Image 1: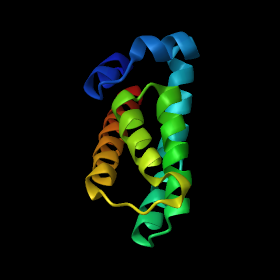
Image 2 (image 1 turned 180 degrees about the vertical axis):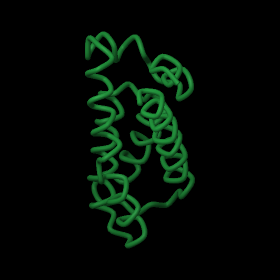
Image 3 (image 1 turned 135 degrees about the horizontal axis):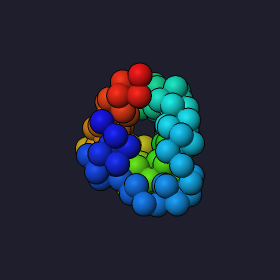
Image 4 (image 1 turned 45 degrees about the vertical axis):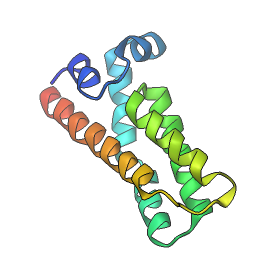
Length: 119
């Protein structure tokens, strides 16, 4: 899978990310950092432990990474979760979190396909 195909598949904005990063090698370097990042695991643990401020911090970080990488759908779902959890508010709508999980797994599984194509 190419990066262009990846961005189409996840409803991302390839034109935006290539404008920002200037070349695909740089995009992939940051994509690999995204794949290794632990904030999604921290988000899952925080939600499980009902630690709403930790969940907010993790979702806010994921939101920023998704925005920088132009992962549009993931950005939108994490933005909704971040706003829902702002100021330590309890997660009242589990569907918001489940959408983040779905969008995150879609990005990760497709990024792994891009990585396999590179090898």
